Length: 338
Image (cartoon, rainbow, N blue to C red; front, side):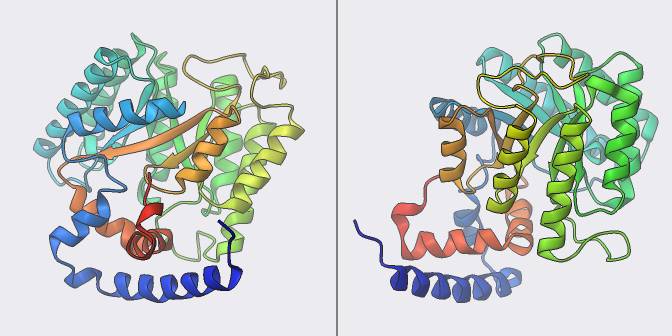
C-alpha cells in the first residue's frame, strides 16, 4: 500500500488534538475507559496474566522484567503484600522457565517508613533470586529517594549480593556524578538502567526541556559505556536509540560481539554483551521488534497488578505517546499491536 504523506500528516494533527482532549478529561474518565486504555500497557490484574503475556511475547526473542504495580505505601502492613507477591513472581519465573528479571520499588518495601526493615526484606529477596541467577533492578522514584536507592545497591554489593542494580534518570543534574561514583565503587559490577525519567522534577535540580533531556540521556549512555558498566538503554525516543546504536558501534559492541571494553568483566548471566535495550509493554512495539530481529538483547517491562487503574492514569498524564496510541487505536485499530 502506497503511503500518503498528506494523509499521514492530517491523521497526526487529528491524533494530537484528540490526544490532548483525552488527557484533559483524565479526572472525569470512567474506570472502564481507563481500563480499556491500560490493557495495552498493563499485562493484567493477576500474576497469571503477566505469565501469559510473557509466554506470548517470548516468540519475538525478547526477555522481560516484571513489576508489581503499586503507589507509595504508608504502612509496613502494605509492604508485606509486595514482599509476598514478588516471591510469587520469582517462583513463577522459575517454574515457567521465563527469561525474566524483577523490577522493584524500594518504597514499596518500606524504605521511607523503616529503612532497616526494607533492607532486610530486599536482602531476603535478592538471596532467593541469586540462587537462580535472577537479577533485580531497583526502580528509581522521585528525588527524595535517589540517594537512598543508590545506597541500597551499594550496601547489597558490600554484602556480596551482586545481582542488583539501579535505575538512573537522565533528567537529573546529579546523574553524571552518580554514574561516575557508582562505577568507581562497583567497577565491572556496575549495572544501570538509564531512562529520561517520568518524575517532573523542579528546574533547580533537573532538565525540563525535551531536547535538553534527550541530550542528557545520550551523554549518560556515553559515560556509562566509557565506564565499562552494563547499560540497559530504556527509551522509545528515536533520537536516543539512534545515538545509542552509534555509541555501541564506537565501543565495538553489538549482536554477536564480545564485550572487550577495558574492565568490563566479561559476560553476565541473563545479560547482553555489555548492554541491552528496554521498552515498556505496549509502546513502539515496531521498534522493539526491529531491535530484537537485528540481534540486540531487548527487554520488555511487564507491569501487572490490582493497581492498574492508578498506573493507567499516571501514564496518561505523564506520557504524551500514550495519547497518540489511544488515538491510533480509535482511528486505525489495526495498528493497536503490542
